[in-house]
Image 1 (cartoon, rainbow, N blue to C red):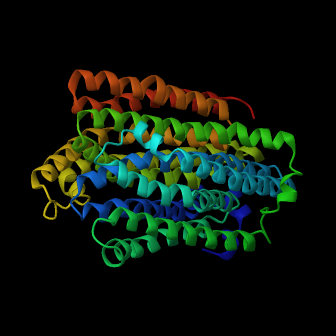
Image 2: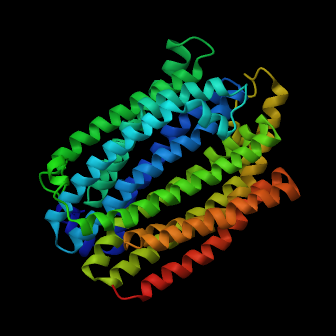
Image 3: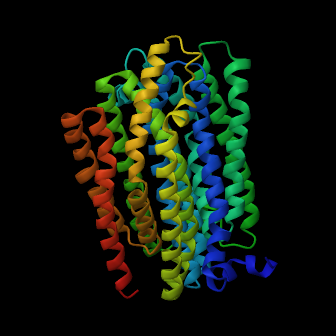
Length: 463
């Protein structure tokens, strides 16, 4: 591809939509997958110990990790999508000020979250369902990854969003991917070489903390360099000069995006608590499934994130035809990925889940076999939600790209609070563990119908 075609205006305005989507989405998908491996590798190596309680503990902490992600969306997605719209409207100086405002906000929010979790670690973990068998492991992981690691983790995510929305998708992806690769190297080193047996969770947490720091430092340097040619800044002074109207637009998208992720997190907390009420082994099985099913989800989310800057830019510039074609192309590609996921997981559910728990190394072989049985059952049922789950992701990202924060929030409330959580409670009471698994496809299908209605209505409105 010619160098001129890589210019951000060429990508956003003139490059054929499938090619533009590939330029933006391929690095993002790769980044999502490596970042997923980055997050899953802890679970993989913990699974090598054969300790179901360690696995259950990391499942509990996933809720707090996702809350960290939710907070980063306020200034990452809210700020990033607004920067793209301001660029499309030709207001690059205000885009620069909003990028600075997003940077400052991310730093302050991450420090506040770290302080809060640090003060209330044990009560929070007990609320999430920690037991005598899992509490100590969960505390170790939380203090290192979320108390000490909240700032680099959140800041890296926000910097990546801002870089991506100004056309630097490959650079953003390289930073996040590099952290993932480093984590894969450090995990076994800390878990099985440096630290003694019994400290595998501490080793995994240290590896994750150092990897987050490395990714954040790289993205800081990249962001500073990109600021020479893109509307990006880290100046706290410039942040204070941003317009009130722009800040309102940022929060109008960023807060609903955070609520969306937060409600998704609340739904996972509910699922964990329901699973834990059955047994720690059911919880461990569900935790394995949540990690395995994230592979196709990561591809779909990466595709949506890659399309988002193109949609936002063309929405602001008024090129509705190009915006709609981007939406339709991304939707088709995502549905193909989702269909492939169903076929794969129906055929290979047990081998996929066994990757996360070594039955041969397990102190109690019967426990390990039972855990894998639950994980495979959850995976075969939950994977049926893949196509409608993608419709929900895709519609939500499109609404956020257009600045439709209210619609995004309404959709997330209906999806998680009115449908998924009540379905989990009701179906679990009626059918036990299988009912808990079936709640996801049932709720996502109804949510997808509502999401398409909201997106269709937004597209019919004049800008």
